[in-house]
Length: 632
Image (cartoon, rainbow, N blue to C red; front, side, top):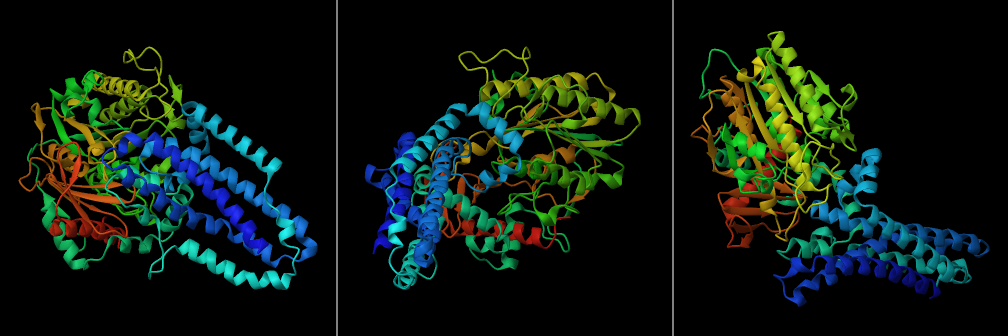
């Protein structure tokens, strides 16, 4: 029984750390739980205890095997191994519990696959952490040092003594112990073991996130992404033919043969000479920073001025909360795919539809221009593999005026882009270019003397970063308007996604609201107030180029009668299909729910089974198109 006693000590040690981390998160986000009763919000701890037990049961597996199977003569060295093992995972747990706070602040969820994915970029991420979260990092290390010292000085474990009984007697305990750990990890007597969806008990997203366990969340996300072929099943099942029919009807796009949704789109702006296309994608420029989309016009005066010169989208919603979702939407007219985005998926690294592959047969030269290292998020490989002639990245800039953690400044970016466009024009070449900014990214490092900071705000803040991005947009148009190519070019300025996710809605629809505008010679100043998506913006820009085109873009030009007010959004692993102000939310291993959106918040409403089936249809169809390589 001494073995069981030692295992219980280890169990309660980890449970205590998880509890303290959850308690801290609960207190920190208590204001987000005001819609719940105190008793309801405390359910986060009850459901969290299940996730903590599941996680600790896995951690106990190695100690259980060593304690029951090690011969007595090796008891002392074996006990040291277990103590080191316990200490290592104790320190990892403390670090991850500390890292949970800034991660939730940034992404609105507990650490997940992104947490591990960013480890691929140690230089950028370590620099960002040191500059943006030095106090949190110091606090984490101080806790780790204090916990390590306390553990080594006052360790309550008597592991060597627990191994003094005969190995035969201890071996008899192995199966019962493994059975208990199996029950602890499974935490369910049903046909399906418990998983992270068991923590989703409330319409309050923050209550659900508090209930989760960060280590389990990371491990589960890594496991799930290795099983992408089975991922789609967790959202539900619908016959494939019915799914295509529903998506076709919802988007008002006829279903074709070899390439679903490919169709001829005659331009509404016929011209003898087609235009170039420049799409300037803005990192994290939310609608709240832009006047014409309902935000603060003083932060983005350039965007506000340009809105009176062209077409402004006031009710645009992004594909997701990750840059690769926005890049796919504005480069390919694609909608969010369950699991990893297509920019990083194996089957979309070549022959995937893009504006470059669309316009290349018409003689257009293409480029992707980025201020950082394009290996980040696999952008270089994806763009070069899918029709783009050239990728310009940080190493290609000569003597940039300012370099931050994430790359050269946006002003350096637009100056280089302008030189590229001038060179194309001088050769009589048509061109299409995707530009991607970096300024509005933590730790918000900006060149001095370019903008006057927002009064009352620290120098390094999101508002100043957006204001600098707006300044760079102004520089692009200042330079372009002096060149002959300006009147021959359609310019798009659009965000990839909004900033940090706030609020406690199960699905934070408001945080998908982003601005976009299109500037083109001859285009009258106007606003589009209807619900729109990033593929709609791309289709509208192509329409303004004056070409009749055949493409599979999953959206419509706003000048087309076929345009519908439908938006598909992805947050973490959840999907929301919005039809006007009715929103169907689909989660893994959960029944779908329907909400009403009032422009700010979601409120639970009666089920709309048709919209819920449509949402599942989109998830299913996009997965099928990707896996069968039907989007090319």
